[in-house]
Image (cartoon, rainbow over all chains, first blue to last red; front, side, top):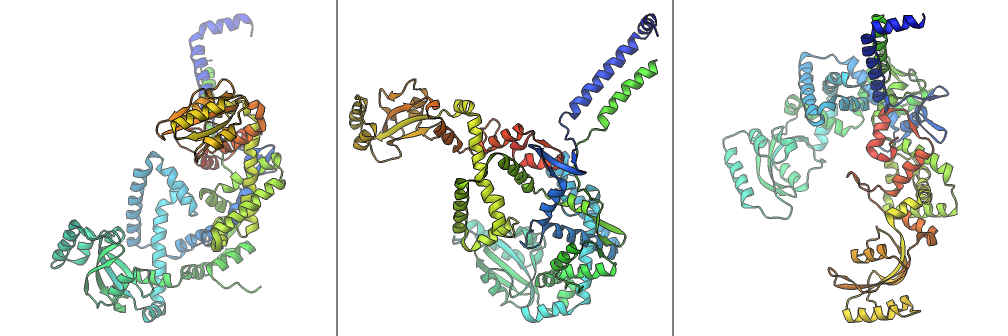
Length: 338
Length: 299
């Protein structure tokens, strides 16, 4: 191609060349601007490098070893073992419990509510936030969000079925700890302070309403204990060694089935206490979740043992010998003899 | 021809498509640790979950250790400081000492001592090194000056004190002892800077003094109903360089999220040495977690 030919081409296609040059320049600038703050990858000896400093590399493998060995909230078990258990439980629950339509419906409702809440608090970054939160629990990311809620329902069923099949667990609690299902309505009054006129008026109003209306309905509307108010004032099953304040406990254990107390003063304020039931059969029938909660509170490692039993039925293999020993210790399972 | 040119133009846009932020994984990320049915839990899954929990302390510690290993050897002074700190913590926490260091994820006291207490003592030295390297700039910000200051409530007494202090060969400390009231400022020589917390009227004089010597007039702090007698003994930091370094290194500035707020010196020192020793970061998630904890990790 000689110079004359090139000149001819330039003359003939000058507009296209101009547009093409502008596009290329734009593309190059755009690429540079987009990537100037990009975090680039680095590896050394086949290992991913997290950071380099003074010619030294800190690798992902080093970070893993350190994170794994940091003890968790129990100050005994390495964090890596706790996470491995969390992931194990998720798989066991997911594979061993069949989802019913009711469970799917509940899970879907909870998922929608949670998603709306995250959107509201996190804004447009809610998916990224949820991604991280789910990964902390051993899920892949936000795509598992719906599964997370279904797994919660499945785990609940797993424990409910187990407690139902092993009635001796609750029998023991019932015999030894005199449990009762308790609800209450709280009017907050500052510790060591007298009741104000406004607080007294509220208590009087509640007394008046309780003559005709359901205790749970009044608790939901008026109780200042927001945690129990959403559950119609229910504190679930409480036992003689629960952490309720002593004045509340003394009053509650003097009441009979269905009775409602007068106003009971504690450091939190004034309580109206109702005994929903003291009967074991009624607890087992109508308060299944609370029974399971009480059984688990009395047997802190029960859930892990149930998970292990189910895992063995699924032919679980823990391929790392050290991890296996640590997991079994964490789950309270006797170590197999070599 | 047209097609060729346009093709080149469009291909250029592909420059952006392959450049995304990097994350890291362990070398044997596909190593299966647990198998349940057909599902596998790999070492890579555990790594992803652990990183997502956001504990960046090991990364921060690794950076600190690299810097102190390069710049700050463990000498008797540092060891002594670390031992004193350990004794302090043990006394402070008493029976809860073991629970306390375990709550930070340490199995035993020795690991906590090496990773936290001794490292902290070495990091403090790092700040001094930073100040030494950047003294000329920091002096412009903090303006260290040597001065003697004492306070007198009574006006007549303050006038007499000033008169005495102005005499040739006057012993300022002795005059302070004779005329000065009990209080924070007792006439002994000290190094003051912008963060010393002196009454405004006193610091203004010391900062702006164009020569060493006793103040011409008493300085009155109306809010405290007190008079101050001040003598600038050395305004040129170069004449007390080592003390100036120590003085600035010990300045305490709280971390603040306000824009343009001055940064703590330890953070500045850290950022300075990261930059000096060619710091680079290669995992976007870990980088974001580092930045959330402190801007000193900014690359």
